[in-house]
Length: 79
Image 1 (tube, rainbow, N blue to C red):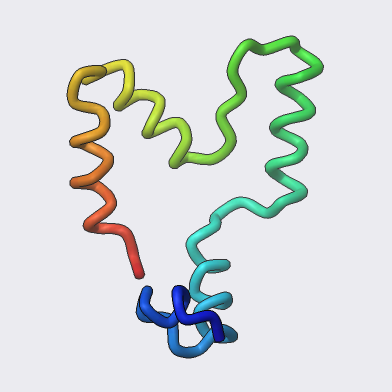
Image 2 (image 1 turned 120 degrees about the vertical axis):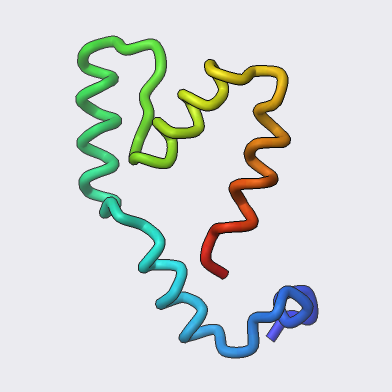
C-alpha cells in the first residue's frame, strides 16, 4: 500500500473502496444520461447529482463565503 494512502488513515483498500462506492447515489450510466441529455439540449452548465446542485446553489447564495462553507460542510462528510 502506498505510504500516502496509509497516512490518510486507509488501512484496508478493499473496504475503503466499498465505502466510497456507497457515497455515490448515482451510477455512472445515470450520470452519463444526464450529461448527454444536457449536451443535446445545449445546456450551458450540466450539474450531475444532488451534491453538484447543492454546491451550485451555495455558490450563488453566498459567493463570498463559498469556500468557507465547503470546508465546514466537509467536516460532516463520511470518512
